Image (cartoon, rainbow, N blue to C red; front, side):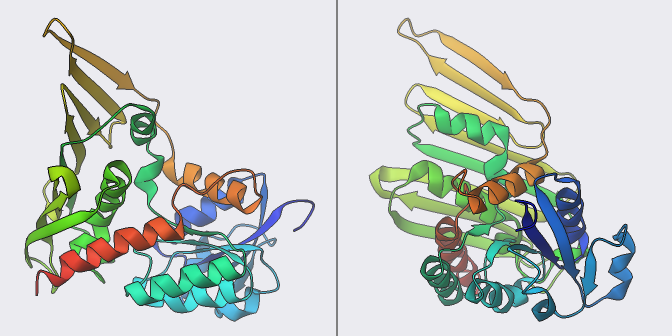
Length: 305
């Protein structure tokens, strides 16, 4: 700590890492002390002399209290384990790790060393989802579409671990029932890994979630519909909109529209991480929930083989 501010380091200054750097740099409640990247060209975004730049992550261990790890998935376990072993809090981008065993190990280390391990499931900070959690919602059927235009930067994992894992995380938190079966269908189109997928998850009590994800779409769309007895919720993640349609006692339908101000979900996530480190809040995207989403995502990915 420096002047009662948490010392922060950012590991990885690629596409997402640059945003993490900017958010921490602008945050008055932390001291961004260090950044790490093996590509010196990425240092061009660093402004001023108060942030130190390193090529080796080991060099910042005595300069930070918490880190954001924003690197390719293959590096997540090694980096997160190193910092957790040194009792440093970790905000780890999704997907959590390459394997379920690695995720379990990280959770065990975090618990042992009393560290915060938070996973970058940004969609949990969407105001529409936050409002939905406060609503009475007993889902019977969930339909999700997450479509993105092709971007060659994030193809080290398939579309399930790249995109659908956000919706898996949300669905698991909403349903909170045991999974009975998973049916999968997916195709490789532009990369060597599955680029478009459809998944049907059946939970206990005959609750069904149907998820579609594509990273080869001509448009960006992130929508979810949740059907329950006499009511239906529609969420537009991109436009921060939530609609509820329900049938009253006179069998007439009422529509309630919830519109939210445009928010910065990454900023909200980082603030939640900081406040969790300070003991002021509870993490909204814990290592435990990250593990649960990864377990399901891995089962789905195996179904493509």
